[in-house]
Image 1 (cartoon, one colour):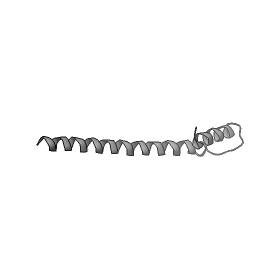
Image 2 (cartoon, one colour):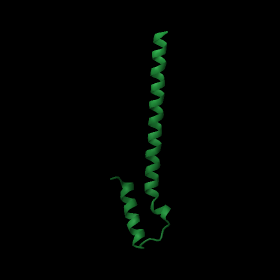
Image 3 (tube, helix red, strand yellow):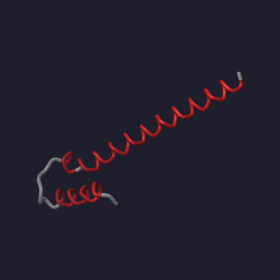
Image 4 (cartoon, helix red, strand yellow):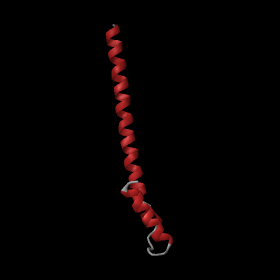
Length: 65
C-alpha cells in the first residue's frame, strides 16, 4: 500500500468522523492523483509497445523485399 492509499483512507476516516469538513473531492484527491499517474504511465507503456510492434513489422517487411 502506497502513501496515496494511506492518505486516502486517513482522510476518509477523518471526513466520516467529522474531524475535517473538506469536500469529498479533496478527501479523494490522493487517490485521484495516484490513479491518474498510473493511467498516464500505462498509456505511455502502451504507446511504446505499439511503436515497437510497428517497428518489428516494418523490419520483417524490409527483409522479405
